[in-house]
Length: 354
Length: 276
View 1: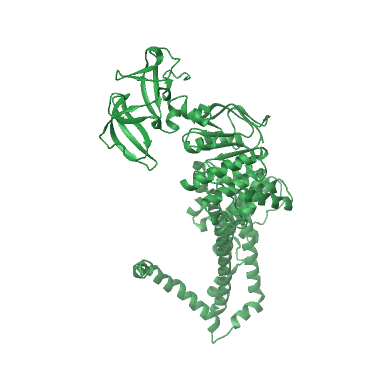
View 2: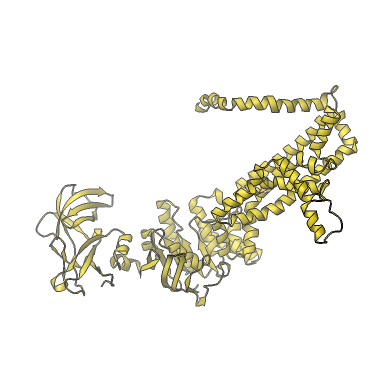
């Protein structure tokens, strides 16, 4: 069990910065997710922590020790690859026993530890199977057992659930979180799946083009994104551009209409983008009480909810309403409304929102 | 039903080749096998003759020895070469592969005679050794087993390197990274993961080289200078010099059986590789 400390880590490939000045502190036992689109540098960060790739600049500390120049084999890190990377010529037992055998464990302790690790991932009785005889979910659990069997200081997971179907993924997510809590092991997960990031992590680091966009707890990142990229990448967001109105309690949209918002510290006239989450929007039959008049262009029934695509004078918006009876059909005239405090404002000059 | 209806159509595509193989390959082999046991009547006398005449056993023993040594030399030279090629950038891999294949474009006869220029008593290698004073008299590289092994290895090395390289390229780097992250040193990664995964291809390539050496004709004929006849050269003598077709047929059958046995082993190794 160890803390992880990245200090302004960079990785350059020629003139391209795959990872650009990334700093991150992960506390002992914490579960942090690195979230970003493909090519954002998230896997590069993970391989640098694992020691399979070396930073062009900056330093990496694990448990207070500088490991920047330490080879992967000496870092005592459990790593689970997206492809699982199980050794195809070994059976399940030998795969899980591999990290123990390279550490010269005795036969008896190896057997006990492998049995315990396989029990933790609920794969007792699979010892003699070859990886090719296992389903994707089972292979994933073998990879996990192999990564925890030698009691590593930290656990790194590279899109471990990416190859599983949705139903199985949700199950394994729950199991993974349970396992991580029971082991109390410091864990970094890399994913492009925002739901996975939100549901599993203590904190999320959002990455784009190798740069940190935000490091925050899931709810914080979702409700108070630091910029448009984070807002857009974490779920769906509606963006309304305008200027802070008089008294800083409203935003003057480009259409000339003013919409209410929570109190803002920004000066009157500052150019801002208002962010509204779809589930915070309410639709009502067109009337004087609404904040924005709109026309429903599409209503998508999703079972638990209905997603409405609407056209407003300030552009298209998306609203999500509970999937009860009634609702609106395409073409209906509606008004969109929300609570003033549900509006999150980010300044367009790139400074920190608040 | 679909399979049955489609069968004649697909059969039509293979029919020309099948007839050709039957007429010029299967039938002659069957006739040869028959000749070895039916001349002048049903008999195993020709096989007894093979065992009782020490010259045939010597030829078989020499052929076996040369085939084993050539296979080992090819494996020892080819494995590091294929391993090195695997680590190159894709562009350099293309160049390296082309260089390995290059000898295929040159006639085997030309290549074999080239070895005489290189290894003969007045050849390049001996001149250098003599000039450097490393040897007092020219080293006899040619017209002995050494010459045959050098020539055969040169001709057959690509048959081992190419399939081995192809198999090594398919070994996923992430397996090696995973092993390293699990605490294995570079050497352990090679010994426990890379080598076992490349072993089926090494075995298959080695068996291929062994089979090809076992029936080799041109290289031992030229570089052996008639002094190191292998099975194929003995067959040539038996048929073209002595017209002893029955003995030749019996010896051919032995060659065929050894080759088929090797093929069976290679299939078995391949099947084991596929399931693991």
